[in-house]
Length: 204
Image (cartoon, rainbow, N blue to C red; front, side):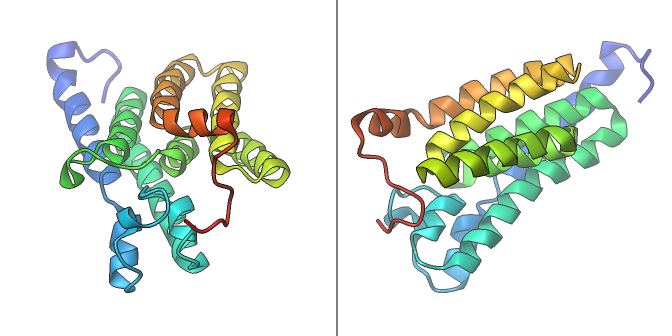
């Protein structure tokens, strides 16, 4: 899409990128995989969340890994495909994918916490920043065993990494995504403060 293209011509691309990202992001891999393998309704297990951490509470590490991969790659795919029409469409697709995971229409807008999808979007936008996220998450998870705390810290590191690398627009998008991610983790934050948050590998 030419940089000089005016808004009247550009907005259909932007809208399509946002909707495309949303539809990809709203695919609930955790629920689909646990149902297909007979692991039950994920929403009635542990925290009731549809993400990989809660899938791990079923004791099925393979399913948890597959959920993590699916939730991550749907964000990456949205960005990579939309990037064919320009950097702005890539950013909007990332936003759409993240919103789709948090608020999927198929699940009455009750989705996951968005960590894997956040990582996938970062991977599509700037792989080095995704690496920063992964390293911070792994280090925190190793030291604390709290998935939620690790995600919160890693998301902040991601914002810093975008700006330090000179990617201002990506950094601004990351700020929006981090605010949404922290809001989705508000219950986890309360439990972390109270000392009642579940740890990685702990069954519900």
